[in-house]
Image (cartoon, rainbow, N blue to C red):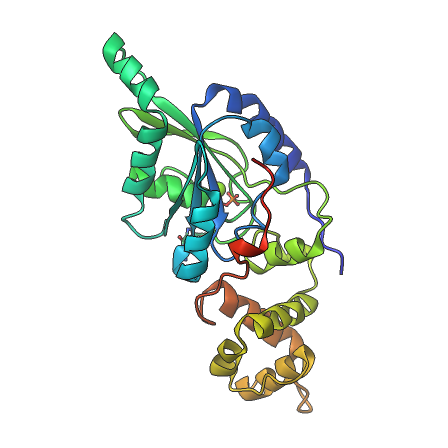
Length: 286
Ligand SMILES: Nc1nc2c(ncn2[C@@H]2O[C@H](COP(=O)(O)OP(=O)(O)OP(=O)(O)O)[C@@H](O)[C@H]2O)c(=O)[nH]1
Ligand SMILES: [Mg+2]
């Protein structure tokens, strides 16, 4: 399976980002805490250039705290800082608003001294489905943007006022034109940033089992009550049998079990999982 997904609307999104980035004071770069490295889009770097960045390790409720903290430390450098968020719950907003105020303190002070009523403006970026629109709704405590549990919900840009001195631009999730690294592509698919229709669900579930075996096999054993000292296809087959996912004639329904396993991972039913460890990656983009 070779995963690639860069539909026409993403080319349009990149153009929106390129055009509007010039008029913003800072960037909120949303990452999914389950695979932060895979969410770092190298194509964003040329647009961000020297703008201050708030990395948001979102969906922290689904990730492993120690690894998320490792990423927060690694990504906080110079005029880039990182915060951990759960956008679906209240309580994440204040960290982002205070980070934005800190990063743009000089500008806010200048506006205050001049007595002008002008807002600082931020652009919210990230791969599809990482929670950009949900984060904006969390910040302004209302459902001003449309959200949804699939990739590609936001299709155009939308300015949203958060408070009397902060405005944010929601952008459509964007990937990179060529996903050369298929490990990254698969991880983006596990977390729902690549739509299921362009992947082979069975193959994806098998590679996820392989990753989870290396990550912590006990999570699979605990969820499906199967022996994990064997190959991913036997694990999936045994999980199907244990779950009663059986076709006519007693054959395990591998396709249905694959869908169930991916759903379990996405909803956090396999436990708190962050597949990537900050120490293993060299971030050379800044
Ligand atoms: N568990 C959990 N789910 C979240 C969190 N943030 C967002 N979600 C869910 O993730 C899904 C995607 O959220 P969106 O805000 O639509 O994502 P997006 O990045 O705007 O997606 P696109 O517009 O497609 O690029 C929704 O089902 C949200 O409820 C979070 O912190 N934790
Ligand atoms: Mg959106």
